[in-house]
Image (cartoon, rainbow over all chains, first blue to last red; front, side, top):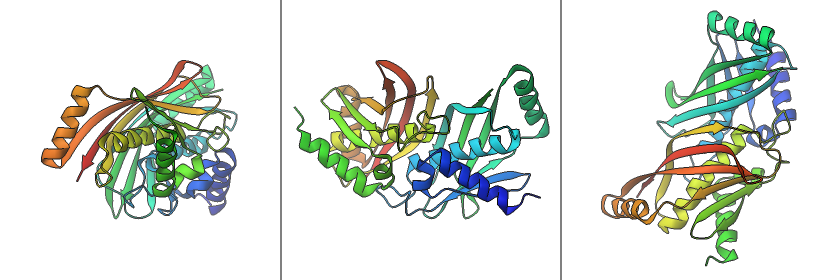
Length: 148
Length: 148
């Protein structure tokens, strides 16, 4: 069970390290062993049509990947970067932005941790969904790299 | 020749319509018939490593696509949205963020304008490069849709 203090500490870490996350109002809402959830209000993140700005949705999905790898790797000396990503906007998001990154299975995570431990470098593909009212609005896939 | 007032008006329109662009400090720096250039300072847009945040770079590239289509379509009643995009981060950006969107050739733009005029809907793929010191740091490709 993950305590609320981990969510608050991770939110504070994001706000300290990446100033745009403060402007976006990003919060780590959940991290429960199955998934990590980041949220941000529409007010700071809307576009010219009053729906969520694609750039905010992409940033939130990217941050979900970073946060998941920080929490799973438990090694703040690891430099985590994003190498590439693709995103597909299926439906506009009309309310709060909510990015859900499912934690990869133990086989994938184990290979990532071993590669990082032995070679000081590892890569992992993460999928993030932006969900609203139970439906997937946006699909994001990113390739993240951890370097010592 | 495009006057500075067009650059200032387009910057103001972005800041009004998409509040994150104010937080990012986005400015339309050039629009000269060959390309559109958006810039943003590193101070508001850095990541945990002190280089440009991938989410900011993606947002800036997306905004370059929006701004180019607004300016080329000259129809503020057009609803322009992004359908999908992909991005490849080749090198970290260590200074000002600079997104360059080359204006498509007249054949492509003409087809886009005609489809929009006749069907009230048109799509266009745009490429945006993030450049620093003459080198391409990031490649972005986005599919944008205009709907009446």
